[in-house]
Amino acid sequence: MHYLYYCNSAYQLINVLNLHWHRKNAGFEDINNYSADLIIMKAFYGAERVAEIVENESTFERVYVLDKAEDNSGVFHLLKSSSDIIFKKQYLKNKYDLNAEELKYDVMTVPKFSRIVAAIWQLNKNCELQLYEDGLATYFFDLDLIVPRSRSYKLLYKRFNYGRDFLDYSGVYLIAPELFIGEIKDKIRKLPKFDNRYLEQLRTEFKEFSGYEDELKKNLLWFSQSMYDEHEVLDVLKKYKEDVLYCPHPRYPSSSDDFMVSRNKQIWEMKALNMKNINDTCLISINSTALFNPKLLFDEEPYLIFVYKLVKLFYDYSLFEGTIKLFKEEYSDPDKVMIPETLEELDECIKMYMKKVDEK
Image (cartoon, rainbow, N blue to C red; front, top):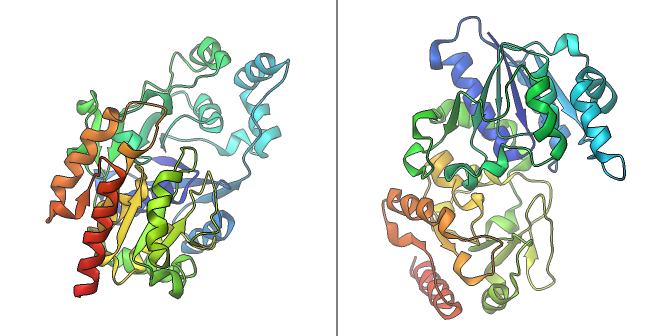
C-alpha cells in the first residue's frame, strides 16, 4: 500500500511524522507492504531545511518540496481554474513540475482541501482519502477547511473525479478524539501517541529549530493572531513586558517594538519539546493551536490563558469553546487553564501566575 502525505505547516508535519513512524515501525493499522511519499509546501519558515532533515531519515520513498502556486485571479479566473481541474496532469506539471506517472497512490492522508491534493487525487481512481488534524478547527470540524469555496470546483470537480469530492473522506485522525465536538464521530480515528524514543530522535534532528537561550528564559509567551485586533490585550501585557516573548503567527507574521520578538529560525513544536521549564511557563493567545500542542503532543502542562472573549472575532466563539473546556478537563490541574472574561480578569490571571513563579 503506497501512501501520500501532504503538509504546509510545521504542526502538520509533526503529526505526519508521528503517524508515518507508527505505520512503518509499530504496525499501526497493520498495513501490508506500507510505503509513503511526502509533500512539504514551502509555506513556513525553514521548510526546505526541514525537508532535508526528513529526507536524511530515508523513511519516505520520495520527499517533494514545493513552492506555493499562485491562485488564479483576474478576468479569466473561472476559465483557468476549470482548465486546471479538467487538465490535471498539465496543471501538476506546469505549476509544480510533477510527473503524473510518479503520483500513484492507494491512500492520501491530508489535513484539508488544497488544489494540488485535489489534482493528485484525480489521478488515482481507487485512492482512499483520509484527513488528519490541523489544529483547533478540526475539533469542531469546520467544513470550510475541506470543502473548496471556488465556484469552478463546486461546478466541475466531482464530475472530473469519478463522482468523488472532499466530503468522501474515510476518516479523520485526531490526537485527542475525546475533545471532538462535531457531528461525524463515527469517522473519528485516534492518532497514536508519540513513541518516546522517536521524540528523542526528533529532538536531536531538529535541534537547530528548538529556540534561543534568551527566549527560553521568558515566562510569558504571547502567540499573536494578528488577523484580529489584539491591541487591548497587548496593553495589559505591556505591564509585564520584561517577562513577555512575542511569538508571531507563522502565516500572519507581525511584530512589536514593546516586546522581545521570537526569532524566525525555530519551530514551536520542537521548541516546546526542548523547553525544560515548560510546565512553569504561561502561554497566552486568543485561541491558537500552539497552546494545545504541549499537552496534546508531549503530555506537558504549561499554564494557559485563552483571551478569545476579549477580542472581536469574525465568528461566534461558541464554535470552539466546547473543545477548550473539554481540553481544560484533561489537565491534571484544570486551574492552570484560564479563560478571562474582562481585561481586568486577564491582569489578575497574569498576576496570579507571576506570584507562583516568584514563589518557586
